[in-house]
Image 1 (cartoon, rainbow, N blue to C red):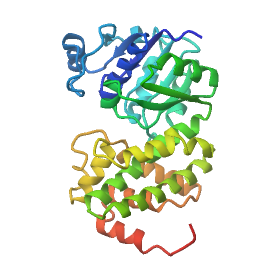
Image 2 (image 1 turned 90 degrees about the vertical axis):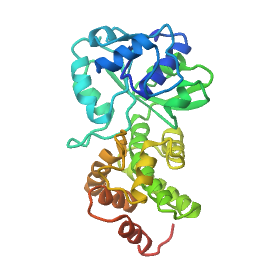
Image 3 (image 1 turned 90 degrees about the horizontal axis):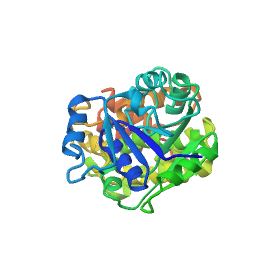
Length: 327
């Protein structure tokens, strides 16, 4: 299965990093960017506004023509979760039947409660939906630092072929057929990372952070099982691995958002203009959990803080005063 031509939709930090990775792996890469100013900067300056010091590989072609980007063996969809539907709807008009469309956003669509691969299937039914997720920061990947992720598709052979095509040695993709498990872990951990940031920003200590992360993982597993995810997937890179990474460092936009909340900033300013997907995912995650009677107290507390229904201190107290029970 040929995967020589790979297009990346989205010229932000993560999109640029993945384009760099594909170019290092020897693929022909087209990078599509909607914003005219950013597209011109990428094309003319050969550098990313979001990744200082990273020079764009000479082989990467930058375009604003979606039809041009559609002519590829596989397409990586590196756009915000809430913009996925509009981009894929436009792409579907020109993409070839059977083309793998791999979502690289970690979130759940508001209103529909749909995961990213479900949106792809809705909007481009002739394509093959997949997901790329795992513990990865764009700056590390762009600079070629060792990183491992998971690529999943219902047809495991497609996931395997793309993993081989993107492998650079330092960027190591594993492949899986558990699509739901891979994308569910990525979406859920963003909400939990906000909780971890709140703990850090409030100065509650390393012990509290470890406890929150561990109990948060228990929520992730409960939620995953209810939606058909495999336990081994949630224990892997896209579940536990991604949770550990994003709950431990300010490099995570969700963690940084939580730190700001913990230090007393208002919910509407805590993200500082950065895309923290967990802000959008939290209320959706809670709605879905309630529909299936899944207990997720940490996620519920985060959603309440973000909605202005609870103060940070009240949210912390609500968790600390929960009834004692067996683990």
